[in-house]
Structures are given as C-alpha cells and as structure tokens.
Length: 185
Image (cartoon, rainbow, N blue to C red; front, side, top):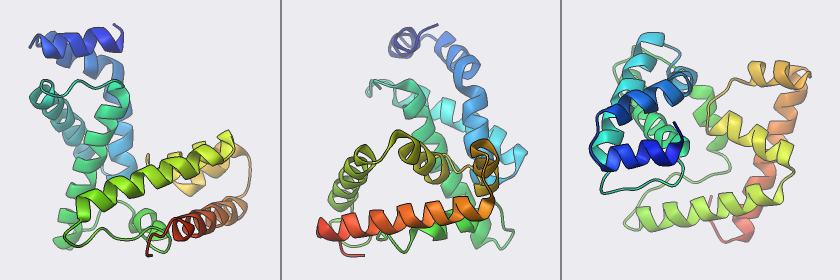
C-alpha cells in the first residue's frame, strides 16, 4: 500500500492503517530505535508506541512523508527512553552519538526554545543542502538515524578512523556555518 493510502486510512480511522504502517515501516522503526537504545526489547516497544502515537496524531496531522513522520516519533520516544534509562543509572544506547554534536549544535534552552529550535532546524537543512549527496547522507545516517560509526565505515569501505575524521570535519563545517548564521554555540 502506498503512503498516501495508509495516511488516508489513518484519517478515516481505519485500524488497517496501523497494520499497513507496521508492515511497511516496522523494521525501519525498530532499527532506528535499536540504533539509539541498543536494546531489542526497548526497540520493539518504542516501535509499537510510535504506531500508537501516529494513530493518535493522525488526524489532526496529515504527514506528507509517512516514513519521516514515523521516524521522528520513534527518534523522540527512543531519546526520551534513553534519557530515562541514563537517569536510572542503568545505561543504554550510545552517549557518544549525542556528545559528538554538542560542540557544534547548541543545546536548546530558554524562553524562545521552540522558535530557536525551528530556526536551527532550518539552518541545518540549509547546510545539508550545500553538502555533496554522500556527505549529507553520511551526516543524516549518523546523527539522525543513529547508525554507528563502525557500521558506516564498513558500508563505505573505509577505516573507522578515516570515517571519524570525515565526521569531525563535517561537524566543524556545521559549527562554522551556524556561527556565520549568528547561532550561539
């Protein structure tokens, strides 16, 4: 079933929409959650919670890209779970992924948090559009989908050290770009 048909099923409150979305994007949702949490049982739960959240938010929302919409829900839920596990000192997932970006992307804080976050998203998207397709895909796979540097190095056929240097260079470019845009790091 095409995404538009699945979204139409959600809008019509047809429960088949959940089954179709799970069939088409369930593996993607579980993989994304597993990249963040590193725990298959948590990844399964997050994927199921994301489908329920989609059911609860469509309508009123009508996503143009269902995969991205579900990915956003999964990522938010997985990061919330990660923070809760970290707070409980049980540990899960990879702090490395979150700390790699903290030197070039500011932490959202303050009264204007939402407006600044939206502006920051726009700047990052603008920066990604300026990159080569390969660099943009690499950055998104690492920092949005949470793929490990080792996995990415294998896929690209390079050493983890070389990939690490490339990611560092990308983060440095992002930081410089955001500073030129007036973002305080």
